Amino acid sequence: MKIRTSLYLMKEAFVSLKRNALMSFASISTVAVSLLVLGAFGILGLNMGYMVSALESKVEVTAYMQDSVEGDALTQAEADIRAVSGVSEVTFVTKTEALSRFRERLGDQASMLEALDDQNPLPNAFEIKVDNPELVKPTAQAIEQMAGVETVKYGSEIVDQLFQMTKILRILGLVLLGFLVFATLFIISNTIRLTVFARRKEIGIMKYVGATNAFIRLPFLMEGMILGSVGGGVAAVALYYAYSALLYEVHQVLAFLYLVPLHPFIYIIGGALVGIGMLIGAIGSAISLSRYMDV
Image (cartoon, rainbow, N blue to C red; front, top):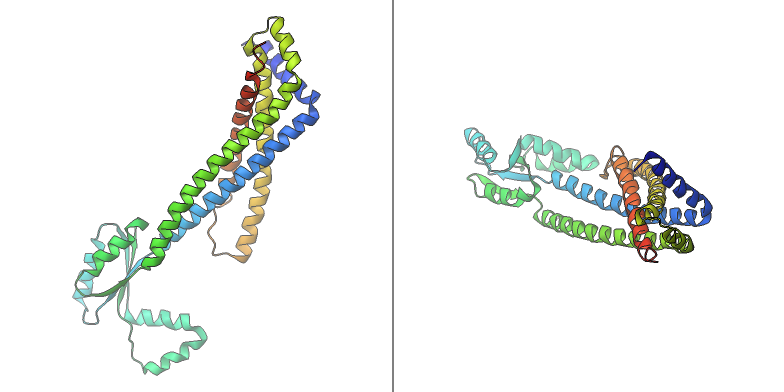
């Protein structure tokens, strides 16, 4: 396509936007609100997945040893645990260190330990981390069968519920995003259809004087892409400030809560919204034009 023709079509698109300023504003507002909702649910879904992944990574197996296991037997037990498939890190916790941790957790009530009369009832233990959260259960079962291991704890109920929640969240997130994309496409195509309907006579005249379908379509496609990209940009800016404020408040009140860092996450979401808005605007324009091209 010639540069002059491209400039002319682009000019026509902007002239149409200016001529139908109120309708263009309504279209941009509709796109912005739709993509804002889409982006908000996208951020929510990604953050929920991020929190679940962070919690999964914190799950570890603790193997409590029998009191009779000492010296070389402990060294051999540690080597056997390290040899288990999926184990990424093993930390030995002595009875003395375990009691010290327990005393710290009790805080002001640590005086209760005086009743032990310098006796330490806590066993030696190994804290084990795995490289894949889904291996926690089989790893715990394998270690529990080893000689010298008294018992193994890993919060089995919590782990099982965590994995179940992860699967449900991922499925619901995909279904919700699919629904919102469809709803956004429907709203935008119908909004742009109003613009096309208002100019149906103009389209008919252009067809009668010999204009090609491509020549007629392009300004409308450009118009739809402009409306979509501007609406996506508005939604992206709104989400940027909203998510920044959310992160600040969460870090002030709930510092332990795992949320996706602002950068570059929000830029990716913003770019995706602009791209989606542009694509949906073009598709919506194409759908709206189809019934008015045959004259």
